[in-house]
Length: 452
Length: 120
Image (tube, each protein chain N blue to C red):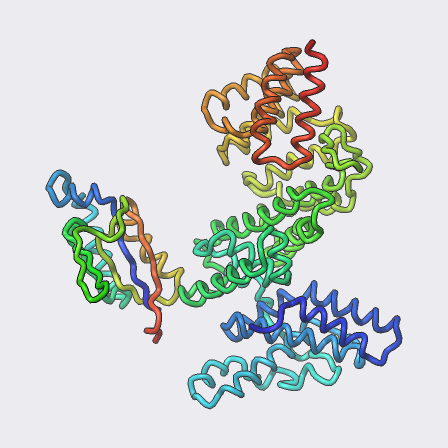
């Protein structure tokens, strides 16, 4: 069903090479096409889906527009408004397709909204011949696309896959690699997701106001999941996997541009920026885990922190903070601390109090226990960990035992600490990454070494 | 767009109703009536019905020319189909909105299944 985007990228490269332009120009034009793909793919596709109501047709026409760009831009130059040019070309392709199939009157009726009106600038030819499609203006339909891809009637896996495919422009193969599955499985998932949208008639729209807060939260959850998937992969992992972090940030940024001033969107953007700033310092050159307190803060990405900072301050101006704003505020405490000792743990503990109140979960409670331990001493933290243990929740979660072990060790109760580290290590066999297991083994050895 | 709204309710509760051990909440009954009226008036509710208890079900299949009949519902699950409505809605969001205002949604589970091949 149409070209994969990788095929488009390949054809973009081939068309670029075949052009008569000299090497430098070719490279520039290729870069322009690649940049246009990154910037405009989602917008062109979203607009085409809005115009045709047919996801597959829209995808094919958008791909053809990029192939055409790769062929003609080296010859004619990059249009002044690449997005409008690409959308016009893609729309014209869709019109051609409908005309070819328009012997049935019904098809013509469907195509009617596509046909250019008097005020539509250059009409059919508007984008061709190297000229700009400056007369053609298209609505930015990306918001409709985001909300449709993240509709709650779709499975979470389907939402994630659709979002990456349509908005981020990743190929099916790339999405499959990012989620450690086969291309065939991912292709089937995408086909089924699009089938569900069509068959159950999931509306292509921005939800009405009464649904908007809940649906926006759903979109943010997808973006957050994408980021965490990339973050969990760790430095040195497959680039497509780690690239999910950048895709998530790009999506959060785009969403923030489309719905400016939404506090939880700003909060999520800030949170992702602060987390991402620390991404490369979490593991040392040998691939070993580096604790937050031991990370080289000079290597934290200042640019990312500088993007997150104004987003967070704007987010915090609005009412009662939601979960993303609170998490961003916590991440900011780390981002702004000159060193580990300078960290404002009292504030972090207070923020976790608030977070626990609005999103009660044992994981948040565990994080709060860590913050309280840092603010008020390991004994206070241990009491909170004991409460979680008594509730029976997280009994199989290795980080609960690792946290307990760490606090016991700091209290000098080394034999108990070693016991808890052993439990944590045993549970980590199933769930944790190699680097985390090695870290726990090191901590156990240290504790045992001083226990005797 | 046509959807079937399938009502799933705990079989134990359906049996208890049938056996008179539990009576349905009159407030719920009134609400269901009002819902039916409103949705018919709006042209959304175009069909449907309440079904007898699952234990009254007969399961049937033909294998090698033989008609095999067994007692009881096909799927042995806790929640069984108790009834259905046929809805005519603009899109899934409208169907969800309509279904969410039916009292059964508060204690049972709804499945919204689009029809295929009957698109207007």
